[in-house]
Length: 136
Image (cartoon, rainbow, N blue to C red; front, side, top):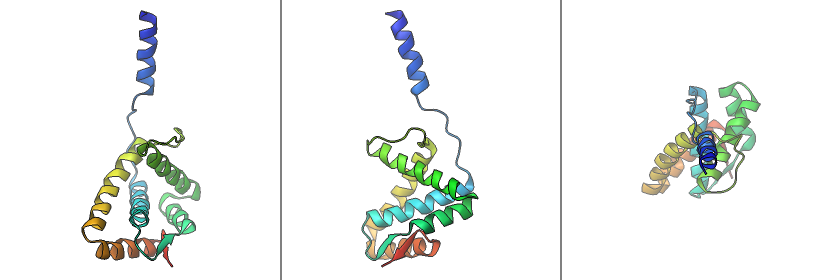
């Protein structure tokens, strides 16, 4: 029984949360833009849809390459799935993305709930200007 408990303890330590590297300024900026645009869509602000190519282009400008942009988009996707209790690719998951995205999500969503018309216009227009959303 002691061997089993020791193995379980080691596995728990290995599987436990690791110390996350902080997001770079560019990553934090791009992530905030991604989250803001996704909250605009999640709250069903009328007249906006995703501009996937624009999002990757913005990320590439901020992060230096389309691959870096896609990696952060994938990390955000994994964070959403983890938060929702869905299965996700643990290789793409980054705890620092989950934490930062959660803070931004709560802030933007609160604004959209408090004054949907004003916040949809402000956040939606900002996301269009940055290339993450487009108007339809």
